[in-house]
Length: 483
Image 1 (tube, rainbow, N blue to C red):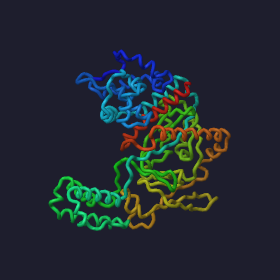
Image 2 (cartoon, rainbow, N blue to C red):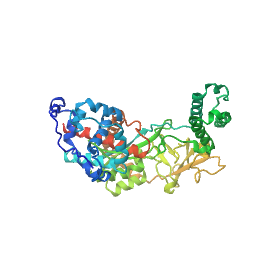
Image 3 (cartoon, one colour):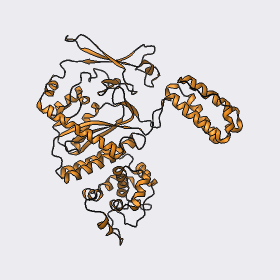
Image 4 (tube, rainbow, N blue to C red):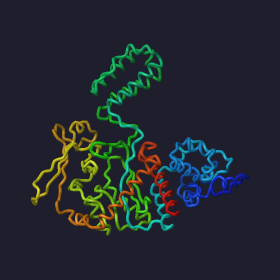
């Protein structure tokens, strides 16, 4: 059964809040701004309403997660602080003397109650509705961009995985018999994967001969794990603690391993829509979704402001069909030609290169065809053939024995004439200056709300983190503008 937060708290100490939590306190203002009862309707199907003991109020649990995000705290720290911080207790609708929850309850709430709930759209729509009701959003333009979040786990090379496993195996053995160190083979000192494999196989042979040690559960477990890794095909050794995370590129020389959050924001700096994808996805492909989500949230859109990543042919067509001005500069290498959807590579506008489905970036490009002739020119992008040979996506992409792996795109000289003319207008140049606002919003998410690194693994966990972070920054922005 759901224990509702609106129930009156019978405590002789409630008046303390009027003394120690001032009217201009952020949490007091949030409590007054938002009616959190909407959560009951959203979460009622996640609880048994007529059986068992009362569950902790879902609003209180949600507010714990919100406090975590606002102040960038861990589960343990947010619960610890709610023991003595009166503003936290007030926000959580607790009596001053009331006991706090167990930190592990937050994990259960995330996994059991928030599972399969479209929390990202729900919370954004709630804040946009509040902003419109308060007459804060008056513009008819949105600014779009993407920000990256690093996985909490590092991507490991096959050699690093083998080194890590063999190290854990040796440590397990040393706990039983440190003298085994003298029997072990000399560690590999080269960067060659085959040499590391050879070392691991010799290590396993030595340990398996020592039955008195290999039968210990702690050793046997690590021995089995290393054997399993060696038995796998080499190309499948590219694994990570976060199976959903992918390599993305900021520039030709810098990359990250994790996720992207694609954002749409009003000119008043209220986030109106968001999607969370893996790190290698193209920014431009999310534009239509961001526009449609913003409209569903209540926005009226006449202009979209973004960088060159959003000036794809399909985006220009969509904008024209829907009477939207697309303020995004053209890039001659942005179209994908006549390929099937599954064969398309993504264009990284920062690096000026294409990225394959595995997240590998082209190493160089060359333009073919004579300038000024009626036939189309093409840009050909060249990929590292050694990576292609070992890639898990090589079937249908890389031809065995090929000396090069290339990807070509056509440059149609007259295709974007209207957009090119629009780029020269005063309206385009004026609206382009608004784009800096979303860069500042990305910085706020990362540096004040812990959005630079994922707090858990997987896309679902990343969406939950995004939902809470965006809800927090939107509420803070609404309160700021109301002042």
